[in-house]
Image 1 (cartoon, one colour):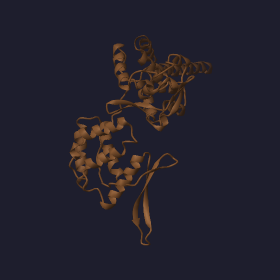
Image 2 (cartoon, helix red, strand yellow):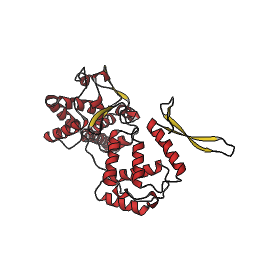
Image 3 (cartoon, one colour):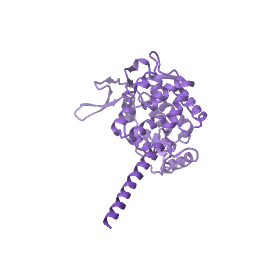
Image 4 (tube, one colour):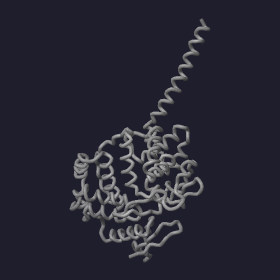
Length: 348
């Protein structure tokens, strides 16, 4: 089996024999990927593809499993776990179905069955896994299906009073969750990023985010890279947050799932409108947007790679600021109206 070599860019490249031309010259194909395993896997699949003109005799499930195995080192453990769970529970129709027998009708029937149990987003995610696997191995099938329409949810974003109530309660009753909420609400950190932080990541008022805590199998591990490339960042906090942080060890001694569970219980106990721990990130972004901070800075601070999520957040306006802006708008137009009336009197 051909071995991959690491490039200066950090990627891995594997070269494998392709063919010999009419002049006796040997030609090779190069396969470059982010990981050694993926590069060698692509090369091996090419070698298999040369002896088998296509994947017609593979089952669709085999193609899906091969795709997931290939991506194991380049995707997060959570994503891989989710993919394997989908295969087990949502793709059984493809267990013995040959690729050559896959058709639009079969896929559409499968989508219809999924739509009876899952949300439109989950159905689309499952279909996305199927098409990604087929495309990865250059399997060209003319599949045309209709996917369920996405439903835009009107999610509640916490307002200032919610956050004040929450922080005040947690300061006295749950120190770990208190610290986690400070880091998320006032710095947009994700729960996995928070759980991976140690005191060594804090320099002055700046926290360096360059890792995350994820679950691999039954164990929690620290992954050296956060969720996305743009998630690597430095976040500067206000003094009131920094002074609350531990000076040694982990900043919080809990796991990501514990944060979500304890947070949900606290929100119910305080009789607040329902929102998730992750929505504290949205609160932070919405506040910055409301006070006129440019989107490019908000994206950098929160580790967002695009403004797509921000636009979704902004659609859910903050009630406190809506009232303020509405009052300002009506006050201005009242002033204009009075001026108009005054000018009319002078004219008469």
